[in-house]
Length: 397
Image (cartoon, rainbow, N blue to C red; front, top):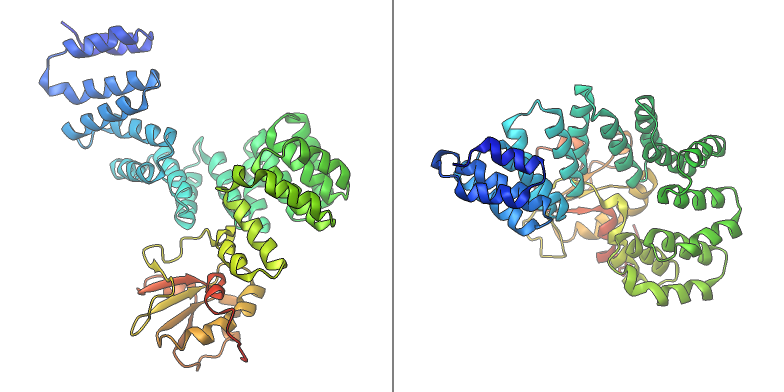
């Protein structure tokens, strides 16, 4: 007669077919959720993700709170890059044990992969407070989020805290990348040497080396590196920018034509394409592709529907700024034509410039994220996304 201990022992010894046979022979109905979980593990080791997922789900159908099956489904959906289900099961784990540092980290990571970045930072900070083995990774990931938002001054503080817990090639390269973006040549020199000594063949170092050479104005050396890796989207995008910036438009356009299909699904490519179109005066495509900018990766008012030029009669809309102070001031003029479509506009700005805006503009109230976070609106839109609806209209204000 099969027993759970024998099944577990055979899985441990990688006797997977024998373990499966024992699972089929097991007849205690009270432990069938464990048997299905064992089968899921076996098929996972066999790289059969579909059967693995099927058995883990059967396990949970019998016992919806079976922790092992939930943890295993998290791994399945991470492997399958099913980020919606990844978030669903990470939330189930946190409901089981909100004081588990690993579950908080997994929830933070799932939120990050779903672009719920503010929530991700919140749970990464909980990991940091636990002072667990996940603390270094949590610090690094927060730094990376702010770097994606083009806020290297904030990022660098988290990377340096992570380094205090131990240097590794990922954190050192993130720190190097941060100093390059900050144009701090002295610190970039220091971390370039550190990163090179750790692993000169690490792909992130090779990418950073190209950007470092651009910072040092060693353009030809940077081009040599980028040309060797132009089959990788982020290398290609930097190479395209470089060729356009130094006036080699023919080379840039030839590369665009050659690799466009290869990188057409990469958001960074569309962001670059948007900026190129705007520079060339192609505003229709420019503002369309501008939607792929990194700064839009925020989760303000995440449960509110994004406005797509629907009629706003009697509806409320919140316009939030996701970029810098200059962009807030520059693009805020597009609130005027919006105010002709509805009398319920809330404009969310940074706290330190709120007082620059008039309080008596018709149909418009000025708020901050803090004062508006618990309010409900019919629609939302990022300030930078508002432009595409009104840029063709003459604005005298």
